[in-house]
Image (cartoon, rainbow over all chains, first blue to last red; front, side):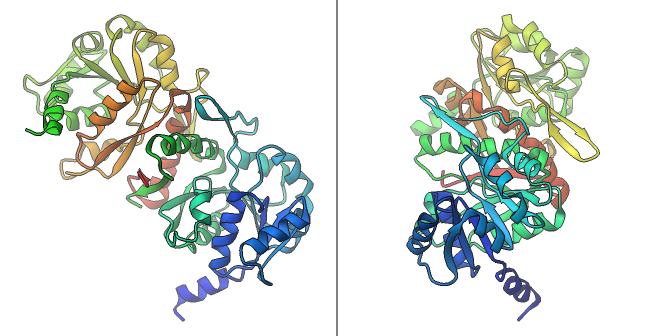
Length: 226
Length: 226
């Protein structure tokens, strides 16, 4: 194996927990990262729903469901794909099992009205910064905000076509999450700045919703010249 | 001529004023839109600086400089490429000559410290919404936020490589600005939502600054699946 292949093999040994993994975004990421070779634990408030979601994605010993707390405890790295409602409380309740781990927040605080989607004011500045505030012993990274759950879940889509921005204040953690994003064919992780600049990345999802409506698309971003 | 060519010829007859057109962003847009066939009036608080900027870009009868007020008065469509400092006051002072016109705001309210760029809180939600608040008789569109002034001004760069998001509440105006963006080779205007979703598009420029630092790039966005 080349050095790159060795690194990729090491990377794929990471057990990934997906909190709120019964939602579309969580299931989509679980599916793609499972295909990439990771052991995945789908977390939910309801264990039977978690188990059913895992089974729906193929199941087996490497793709299981558990309560959020157990998923947080057993995983090496955790993706928070939970609804914005309850985001703060759920993460705060998991501060113990998430201590010392990288937590990837992909939550977009959005609301919808007759004119479409818009971003919700977050006192901490962003969902990711809120996560960092209630998880002082974890390393929070913001990423995977702009990826279409529909495309992640579509078995006819072999290749994604987007870059995901990876934001955080810890270089090792953002490099790790960028590498994980890069395991999904067609997806690339691009460092997108410090956590204090995550609010606009989350809010930009409202613009992608507008683009999708106007152009009947599943829009994503590519970063040019990188 | 085909229908498309006729439309393009009509479009290029629009006289475009560039307020704050002596800055890099303003000169860059003036340069590219002048090459696309538009008559351009570069506006400044200082007429001699405006005239010098126009001359520096080639000058001639189709690329001239004027005071901001005269540029606003004489142009069919105006691009506000002014500094965030003074943005509100300058536009408010031009409400008369800008009445009835499309005003394209490309201003990014950013600040910089030792950790890089970050977005400044804007009470109206965004620079574009602030423009709309002080220009009640104009049609404000937000666009051209993410384009690199360095690349716009570089004579070795024939083709830009990015999409610019075009935001606004008036379909005819956003279509017009998207068409103007499309006159610059390699650039595409993509509708990006209503004005209320412009704040995050402006703020995202801070992320592009981070990307440029990390990757030594002039990063831009492409929207996939559109």
